[in-house]
Image (cartoon, rainbow, N blue to C red):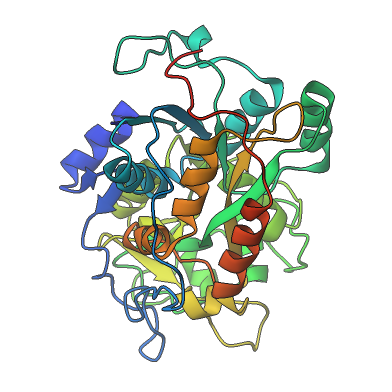
Length: 377
């Protein structure tokens, strides 16, 4: 069984927009958004394709117990589908997903805080299961966070990327903007303009839009402070600069996308998996004169889309560096053909063959410490 704890407000908002979450995945005409340029493919033009050489998942034996995955809200759709697929293979497993946001999840994971302190309960009525077994993060742990982790646990966690993603610039579906450079995005969202644009960009007319858009004020949307996507955006786009005070920060990506859909002047950033027909993806150029690039499986994998990233799971090691078998089996499933097809169905980009091979080699060298994960701690 899979227990997915969603932001109730987000679910209500998405319901009004006639979008549905099934297993954590936003189904709102994912493939139907207009392209930003006639010659540029939309996110739907090239569906993510899993490398045909990836090996299908084969169960290594019966498992029972509970896994708790805490962290990234962006990764919630992937994790919900992976959990559903894994529990079909191992029906005695119970997987709980806590979409806390990457930054909050990292803090709880590093400090070893228990979910029970928030009064959470698992579906079978036992306590929340104690400390999370796996951390989901949309960004790598910082050196400072790793230092805190090592000071508490004696060694660094195992880092396994399970999917690729693109931080994507979204505008309202009616907005005709053709594309943006990173310098322009910095001047739109950032107050310090570290990329060197000569002035703030506050109106759509400053970006060349006409036909009534000339004096329309740009309305900024983004994620809140517990979001790894927010931190990635600040580092990758603003080069560590400051966000403008007027950014309307949202608690979740789904609610941010809905806000942009309701605001013809809105612009925001979120993971590519939150694409819907209500908003448009804006192609991005590294700098003026470069071609605008849409985030696709190819441009994310080869790095030509400038805002690509990996999505990670982190695992704690035992005192002797060993792991519980259910954790290693779940990571094996995520890196199988079945798991990567699940990633693609969730609207994100699968790993390359080389990354999967690297992950499986790393996982193959891990030792195990028990035959099952306890149902409660």
